[in-house]
Length: 327
Length: 246
Image (cartoon, rainbow over all chains, first blue to last red; front, side, top):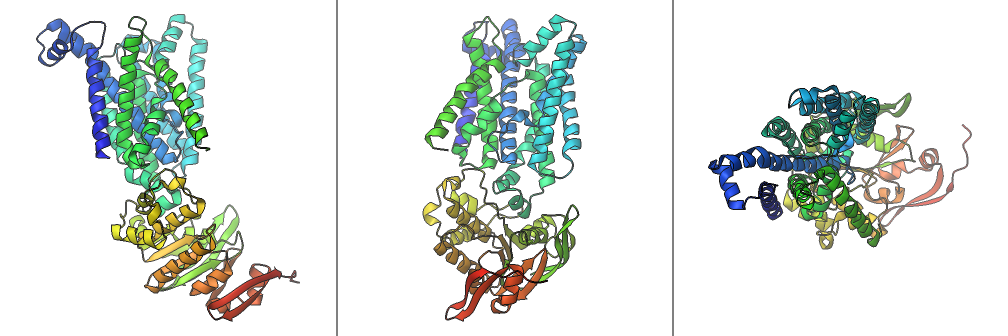
């Protein structure tokens, strides 16, 4: 098991390094890394520290956030089809971002968009609290999340629909495709506290999710506080997914696939899946972000478009495997 | 071991558990019998504090971690969400406790699960999964074990084996309360039968005292033949009881 985490960590480290070394400024690897750490070449150091490093760091953080949130939600809902967008935080964050673009807030100051997106995610937590009530199980949470996602989606469409400014509408559409290009260390700084807090909350859910393997009654009767577990989950997912959406837009498929791919490798254990899926998600996003730069260096292929495209054959493979197994 | 006093559960306006008083002692293997909808599951869940209830339950009155140390619960729904190996499922504790590995081994042995221990539990048959969940409840090693239809869907040999495991556990000074649907099996293995109907306890006592013609007609609506055989009580359902004139 720890061997799996080690292997995944090495994979993430390798992809992180590769991400640092890929870009339009074609510089050999060693001088690049040298410039990153020592600052001996002002131009190259600038590229490494202000362009490549934030992009790689955000890939790592966004991927880990999606992988971890997906694993936590799947564990809590006892359903392998749950994904991070389910409780509405990403939809609400996207709405916040869209409003920031539409109102000009995003153009007025550099962190306007991510801050508005984070505000949207936090508002979604309050709404979920209100809708799902203090008690109740997984079903009320799903229903509240579906209602919230639908509302956020409708509001986003409304903004697009009524947008008097075609450039804003265009910008919104491109932003919603999800990307890690042209982000700065400011973006890293704004997302990091939410990522750390949310990550700590979600990683602490292990014992509760483990007990939930046998259902809510079995978990509650073995000493799990179901209400507290649910709020830690909602807060953790909203913080991580809200921050991820705020800095990268919508990146689909990763939160669903990372736990799926790794479940067998951790012996099905939802607790052990949490750190593994965080690393797996980070590896997926880093790899996809490398791929968009290699596949179409001059066309700004969006990361979210690529993950969605890669997702389809993955699910076809899953379907075929299930059919072979007769499920 | 467990005391219930005027335990009452309402669902909307309907009273589904109606002021139940019950005391279970150490060494008892008690069967909860009654028709569908009699309130057996509700009684077990309310006693554990899994349902909002009025009245008193000595287990539900404990803090959450204390409940988990006092009583293990085997729910009726056998739903294993993830493909975890059998041995890992049996070792599932909670935050309150992690079962002793020796207890896990013992439970695996008692339920004849050693050959399956590395198999993902989700790939087993329904009956095998039921045995895994019984073993998991046993491995908690709590003074009290509440089991909701633990042997439903097991083959006859596995049913008898499971009843013997519960009886041995009670004989060792623990308490087992299990809802069951087979009065014959209950009468042969349990020390005490509790007959429920309409959210109340209709009769409670040693098997032969409880399985009277009147009780069986009133609670189950059946006529049955109950005799004391060489290996314990023998129960044979004969027919539906004629409709009563009250």
